[in-house]
Image (cartoon, rainbow, N blue to C red; front, side):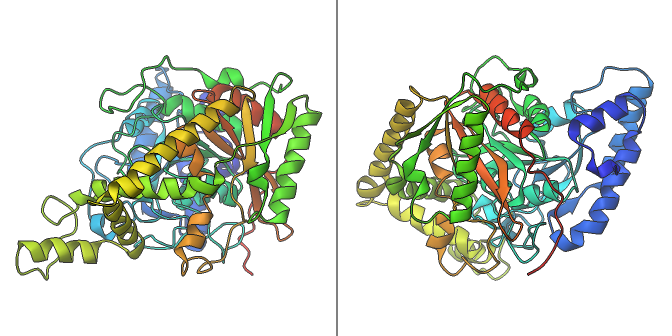
Length: 488
């Protein structure tokens, strides 16, 4: 087995047993990146020099028998919307093309404290607005299973980097499915935790009441190690929840006998590809075989969830992105003749079409005469969605749905029709709207060999049991294969 094929837990074990050195591990991954990155285009910035320097420091730590962190020597990639001290942080936008962050996000501090090694920043749709990475200002990331297709988004670069074995794990952010949807399309594991469980400090905001940092790995055990590291109360984040930290590794148990799973009929109707429906329902049957209770249920939120999400999220985006005005930092138009002209031209030239579309929508729904008509009603609908989830969780531990209604789609297939692109998130946006956690795990492949993911949705702070349920399914199936980088 090649070094780059090792899991997170295997890397840590081999380093501690002195079967490998940290420098060997980092060099092996950068060699893999050199081979694969020209095909996939997952990274916007690589930090090889810093990574090798960090590897040497950690090796000395091991040689001196010092206490080692929980992610000792593990290479990790970071979505380029998460601030990393001294490293270019663009959020996929021309607006921040040359911005070098002067500080670390809290999750980066945690990773460094636990001895992880950051190897680079990954591509994304601009300001995390998109489902394919086609809205990045710099490049379009390809799906490792088929290079003519999208890896999903907005965290497509992180998902593709993990799926193509360029890193064993990566961080992404999830506002409406931006971790889970690309995890599904790239055949990896992706978790969006309960809102407030992971600090948002240092995450460049899209929609503050939806945004949450999550992780990608190739298996559930590795996911627990990464999540154990990044979860924690943070006084720098006003939305951070004060809660005793759990050790998720204790939930790595192959047992679902006391788990009740609801399968909402509304999520299996029109718009869902037959191959995906079949795979997810087979997974439901597998859970039954394993001893879980699985029942059809009703969760009637699909008709208004997408509209609710895009009204509220775009309103928040309009407010958050007002700071990019050409005055304080970021891109400044060289063509402006006065202050008003500077504002206009900077934002016109610095933002991409999708970001401008969402700013326009958000500004409109917040404007006088429309706020009560749209924004206030959307907030009422959001509360109704939360109430529906709460009612469902009185009976079930988890809700099982597809992660995406379609497999990885071809480039250009949905860009001409924004509504088609938004519909790619129809199964994921309800989770962010309610603030509950959800995980996407592989559950099959299409006839053409593209990955299919299923989504387990849990009640607030049910990550431990969710990990146990996902881990149990993973132990009783085998949907982990290396991508072939083929083309249609």
